[in-house]
Image 1 (spheres, rainbow, N blue to C red):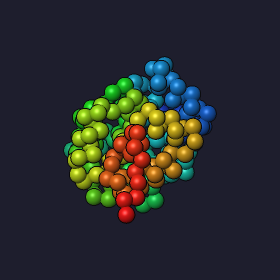
Image 2 (image 1 turned 30 degrees about the vertical axis):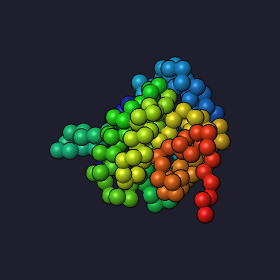
Image 3 (image 1 turned 60 degrees about the vertical axis):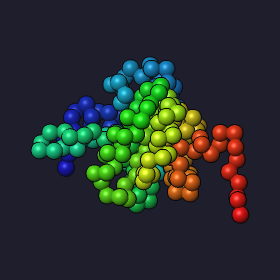
Image 4 (image 1 turned 45 degrees about the vertical axis):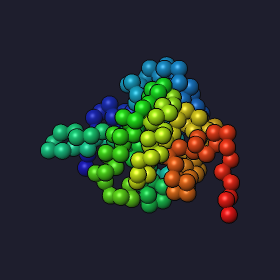
Length: 190
């Protein structure tokens, strides 16, 4: 079992105490870069994991993966949709390119094929990142940007949004639903 630093334990206790109202306030602070009570980037990570917990899903907060007694990789969290585990990667940045997607893909390759991934960015993804992520197979990652996170918080339902994103990934083979709604409807071609 992993050992957690006192700081990590404090962050977990603080996150476990967050309500949906607190999540709304913290999201506003993340967007304006005023979440000063947390280490850089941590507020966003714990906000995401706690929102899944408040939505009724089983979660794991950030943890290190040890290799020969030293941290090999840091996972920002994990959420379970039924029996399907999703690794969580969070980037508190305005723009994210393909590098973050590649990092999560590599983390997923070291895990059983049933493990999926969720990449969260407080801003948005570059167009090239979206295009490349939809062309790279197999698809095991759903992409979450500012509008998705805001919708999940507003509806107080990250679980329902994860179900929808997972369904759309399986049905259409697209990692981000923005491709479905950009000015064109998807019609039944039968």
